[in-house]
Image (cartoon, rainbow, N blue to C red; front, side, top):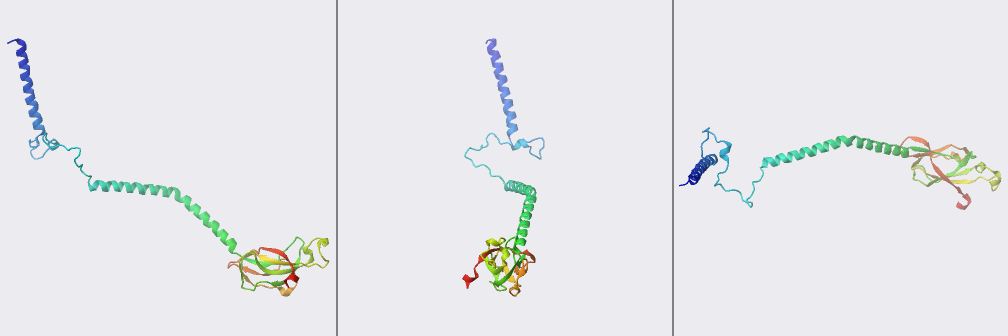
Length: 229
């Protein structure tokens, strides 16, 4: 027998011995029944699957997550939502409060300006107009009036027309129909028995349920008393 063949047999024998040793070591390591150093407890390595254990196939059902993990995920999500709402609320709440207060203040001012009662006075119908008399009221006391409601008829002095040349006759005393631009209830109407009174004389009140604040607003038209008769 040649030297090469002897050497080849010797290496083959060593390989077989190493294979037996490795197989025995791996088998003792993977075998769950193999005792460990602590005979009362199993180590983490003993829980590994054995070579003969059935591996999960691609079509096998995966384990579903436990109820505790689902609850934990839901709790974290709710907490994040509440935190976001809290941050947004603290960031924008002062702005909305100030805006609401400004709007409420404007509404209050507008309502108070419209709700104030006004005095009905003899208006100055031209820069030279000085006096007039009440011919008659077109509404009874207690009447609720709205905008553009005719209220009374005045007869004005001739100085309503500043230039005498523009007057139809020397004794021209025009009649004027006055409409109210206020809303409310007519109260304390006084025609002063038809006497001639100065501009600014109080003839009554348009009551809006609030305190009196200034004179009324009106608009006037020329009126032909003869045509009405």
